[in-house]
Every structure is written in C-alpha cells, then in structure tokens.
Amino acid sequence: MKKLKVMVLVHKDLIPPDDLTQIDDPRMEKCRTEFDVKTALLNLGHEINIVGITDDVAPIRNTIEAWQPDIAYNLMEAFAYDGALDYYIVTYLDMKGIPYSGCNPRGMILARDKALSKKLLAYHRIPVPKFMAFPVGQRINSKKTSALPYPMIVKTLTEQGSIGIAQSSIVENSAQLLDRVQQMHSMTGHDTIAEQYIDGRELYVTVIGNERLQVLPIREMVFDKIDDSMYRIASYSVKWNRKYRERWGIDYQFARNMPTGMMEHINKLCKRVYRILELSSYARLDLRLTGDGKIYVLEANPNAAIANNDDVAFSAEKAGMSYEQLIQRILNLGLRAHHVA
Image 1: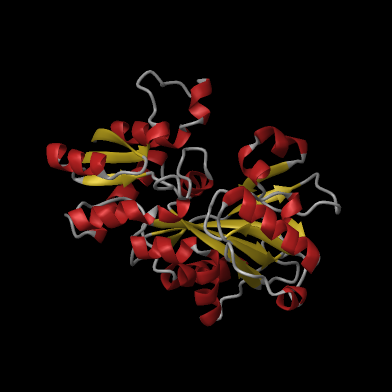
Image 2 (image 1 turned 90 degrees about the horizontal axis):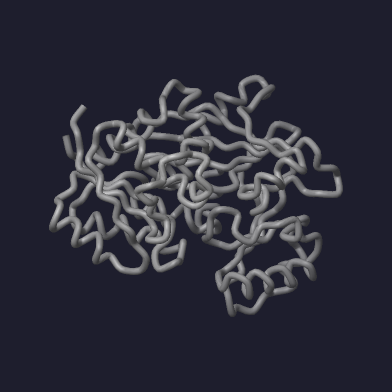
C-alpha cells in the first residue's frame, strides 16, 4: 500500500489536541470523528497534516503550496458556520486539482436540499414523503397547507444532524404547521420543509463506491419504550443524547426480521437513489419501512458520520472491513475519482 501525504480538513474548533489519546477522555465527545480518522490514518502509515478551517480557504491553499499533499481527507460539515455551504471546500479542492475523500460538490448540493432531492427522486418514481418547502420571508399559502397529509414533520431544508427536530416538530394541522415553521425560521434563520410523517421502521443504509457500488448491512433505529403518545422520530435528543436514548429504550442495531425479498429490494433502490443524486465515495440513506411493506426514502446524507462508533463504521465491520480498511477504501475512492494511481 502506497503511503500518502494526507491533508485532513476539520473545523478549526474540532482539531484533536496532541495529548488526546484515550477514548474515555472527556474531551473526546467533542472531536471523536476527527480523532478516530486521525488515528486510523496514522495506523495505516500515512503522513498527515491537520488543517483547521472556518470561513477562509487560505489555510488549505497555504498547505497545498508548502506541503503538496497527495489527497485531502474532508471532515468539514459546514463552511463559515453554514452547513449549506459545505460543498465550497470540495469545489475549491477541485479547482486546485487536489483529490479528496467523500462526495463531489454536485452530489452534495443535490442531496443537501431536502426538497430538491425529493423532486428528483419523485421524478424517477422513487417513493418519498409528500412535502412542502417554506423559504424564509415568503408568504405561506394557508389553503395549500390545509391540504397536506397530516401529521407532518417540520425540519430545516438543508441542515443535517437532526438540528431543530423534536417531538414538537410533528404537527397535526395547518395552524400548528404555520406556528412551527415560524419558530424554525426564528431559531435557525434557514428555510424549512414540512414532510409527511411516515409511520414505520427507521432504516439506515450505507452505500459506498463511485461507479461500482456496494450496499453495506442495514442498520435500524429501534424504539422499545416509546408509547403511542410519542412519535418515533430521530430527534436531536435521540441522535446526540445517550441518556435520553437510554431513558426511552432507543437504540441502533442491525435490521432483523425483514420481509422476504426486502433486503434485495432495498439494495437496488438505494443504488438507484445514489446514482440519481450523483453521489460518490459513500453516503448513508435514511428510509422508512411501513407495516404494509412499502419503502419511503427520507433523505440522503453524503459524507455521513464516520467515527469508529457510527453506523457507517458498524456496517462496514459487519461487511468484513476493519475501521482502518474503511478509511483506506474511502481514500482510494477519492484517488480513483480524480484519476490518481
């Protein structure tokens, strides 16, 4: 295996300190992904240079000129503190001719916008929830909102990580929807989308590859203690608060007891979605499986969470890849996408 000079791009506030070496270090919670990727790259024998970024690409340019990296490992989830601008980083790397890990700019743009991605998928007859977008400052047509198939769930249009999602995000009529949309506009300053709530199993499917695609074993979020008074959704607390998950019996596991033929159907469906949205390297697709066996695509997440304890890594391990092998494969995909031997 060729040893590479890898420029690791991280948010400036998430650079793992040199003395951070233990998993149980309380600082680990803040920059677990950055630490895990850094450790894997070093274990693989690569030379690394960690570059912190906020709202300026000058550190990238300076590192390219002074160090001449073979590839960038992109861990940026936002630029200038705006998640909708995360594609700026890889666009700049394209301009500079530097290979990089993760998704291409076009795929990031298409997948990031939850309304645009649903329009594209619906055009190709991929089942998606019914939805309506609400740009900041635009007048809302109450007649159209009254006709929506409630209950609906209100989210930001472009942000990831379940930002702003809570039990109160579920609305059951037009008045509640208008109120929640206004709240979200005030809280986030971003456009919002209301999607039809699909009652069913929440599945997470990792797809890896550029042209030749592999679908990894399916993960599922299970809700053991939540009763009928609560909606089964991946809220912000569910995703980021371990004690909340323990309280309500919410856990991640590999999908079990799937209907006959469903795994094969999901594999084909996810490959179609991946190609329609022009994704590359790897992505996690979020699905809902209803009680009558219908699959809905909720969204696609390019450059999904890649820490050693995230669903992508667990699925890769189940498929026979160690964490280091997963990181190396993502590097190799980046090199091949840019035609570097």
